Image 1: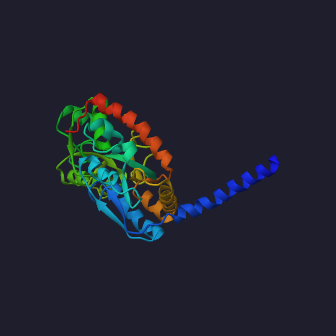
Image 2: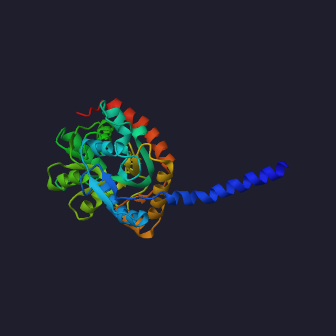
Image 3: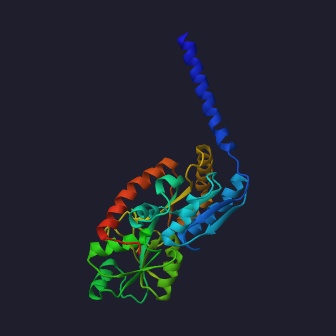
Length: 325
């Protein structure tokens, strides 16, 4: 008798396993899907969203529209998604490092990062590129540090906005190296890059996807990169680790999220489609061309990343006494 019961239980489990893909696929989309990018056009998040959106549109059978909502280090766009209808039709694609620092940086944050946003999956990791305007007399890390120490306050470091991870990185880097440079916020990484290209600011630490084109076109000079290895497109630039710089693992961690309390089956459908898109050779190739690496993952992996980094980056924010205003 107990073997018959065991056999029935096994059969039921097998049936459930067979039904899961069908249930995930059954989570239909009945109107256009919106991907909110909380930064200005042209930055890493924007480039990725426009790369993914046509493929996602094909997968869900609905138009997928990219909407830029820049401001407040990504919090305006993130808040819009946090307050949307929880049905998976409103998505957020951004560097989640900004979400990791937001609870420590903004005392009046209008949404709860852990409760009001539901991770769908990681998308990519892109190393940061430390680059300067050609007028800066430095082509290596020691030359840049020497120049900064000899000219305190002269260098202006562009960032994606107060509280963006590249802003926090530049502050922590200055503290670690004992140098004094000004942090200048812009509405997104693309605007920050353009400001350095024009000479309005002089230094940038920003995602490779948005910054490398300016380096390869000689409009900026690449000094160093984060991550485990030098970039093939910038082989002469040392890694932060090689140059003995702090925060060698910093970078842009791009993820896709949706509104909190979205049904698990909808999130699973979105994750399944995202995994398929990121596995496409042409997507991998385009991301690699921009200096990034596809990093597919589960919603739980994104949640774990956020929990760890909210704590670690929060410590840096508090130690450096960085204020949102």
